[in-house]
Length: 611
Image 1 (cartoon, rainbow, N blue to C red):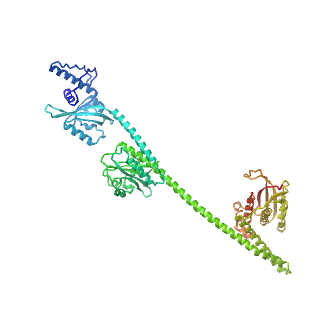
Image 2: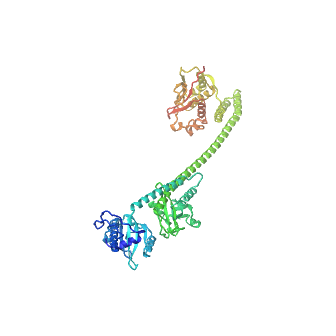
Image 3: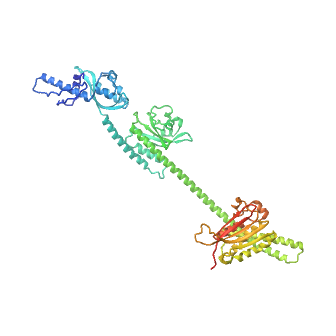
């Protein structure tokens, strides 16, 4: 080791108290020589002896420092003139690569220029400088050294060089950094949980975001970040809209309230989906995110899944760059903003959908009430008109029958028969309209009386025998002998149903057979009382009904097709009346038919024996 005397002088000046030499064990030094134990100073010896002993002690101290420390010397310009092996090992540069180079070769970029300016001003003024520096090795790795730099002066007091003694404290710094990171994370979690806990009830998205910004910018550790805003992307208008800001000047906030995509760094955010720091303000970025700061801003994307929905802008209030903690903190905050924004937007969508559904339901209910009122008014009108028309029509029919009994010539008698037939048809039509209106109005009351079902069917079929014979049709009736002789039911309504079905069968059949049968059948699937059921079938060999027409044949004012009404007449109410009467009795009605092969109308009713 060279310059031991210089180092000794340097150490003696910076030590706070005199070095008290102790017995030092043998150890390896940088030049592979064994250091001998220091001799104990004898205060009673001569001055020359003391000087020799002290020189030996300081030589040993210098050698020990060389083994355990990172030592370098530099000239007045700061260029390296000498290094020990520890310096070479830690920096990973060779000695030849270091000698003649400035110490700035090792700068990591972590410290600002002002840091080194203060250090240089201290040592050129003749004072010692102490501090911890982050350096960069040749391979790009970083290390931390606790550093003492002191000027070396000649006998006249002039500074001739600088000596640096360093200690590798990378492990300690990293441990401290990890501890700080854990503390930062814990602090982050606490603050972000407060944001997650913001109540969204009865608040707009703007209010929620503003409250979140207030929590963030009032948190400890954000340094130069004191104001900011949140922009949501409007893909339709290709712009960003400021929905909330914290501590921004009113004029600045108004100027950047809406920004086109091409006038800001939004494109970079949307492509990279990463934090952007446009510190060097250009013309475009100056139009948006840097109005309230001459130093720029941090722009962080707000994500909802993989979709970018906006940008968080934090303005820099001084010239210092944001540190890693601030960047991570704001990135986490932007993620939370994405979550709560997504929740609120979804809630708003659901609320809007619910309000729309409620409004539609209200309108539908009002329309239903209006329709029911209109239907009721129509039913009442039909009932009233049918009743009012039937009274004078019955009088007309009675008078026609009376006139028919008087002496008439053959021509007059024929005319009278046509008039009576037309009057009877009109009475029948009015009866159908009146019955249907009563059913719709709920004015029909069913009776429960003993019925001889066989006799009832015979009475129903007798009036149709003449019409069947005129068309050459056979009218056949059969029933199961297992059926009770007397049943309970409404004979008038049962006869009305049968009359409608048989009348239709004769009307739509030109040749063949009309077959009426009553038998036991399987109960419907919804019958849970083990009741016996009977099915009445009216089968014909008439024109048949297409499948698509069968679906509406029991609707009111409906027939198989428009031509049916013109060819066969009728109101289209008969089957609708039958359906309502059967269902009022707790039964079912239906049809099986095939065009050209006839039809079978059937209805099922529970059998209630009269005991």
